[in-house]
Length: 184
Image (cartoon, rainbow, N blue to C red):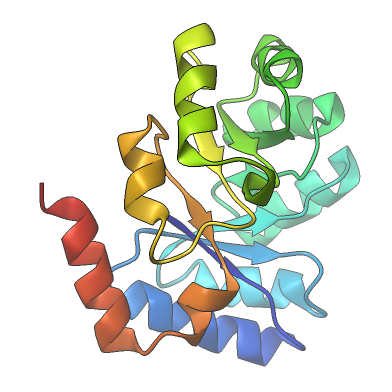
């Protein structure tokens, strides 16, 4: 699971990232739509596996990597982001919404593919995509909830991305939720 953090400022985003990490979440993405996101990434990278989200071009990729981002997430396919990140040994989750876009993202070198927005799909749709493109490591994002996360994983997602609901959930409940996902 990737926790997606957005906030009105860097301090709030950093607080959310620290809380999710303390709850046991292994990967936290701080969106560049957060004012001061680079500062939040720099600080959060000292305490957890933190990436940058909403990375749109190579310049942003380079800046976030310099700030300490260990992975990058794009809402679209940007070959410039992929090239820049891979030059630094940083993996990229590129966005796609169709099987054609998924294959294009993989051909461009994406390490994982963000199925976005997941709200336009159901887990059964993901299962059909996985059957057609079985080598695609898919990460549904944008519409995944606490109630639906397990269904997405059972349908073949390698991970899920979740933001608002996860961030608003108390730490102990996040911890219990993560435990439930790990328990068969």
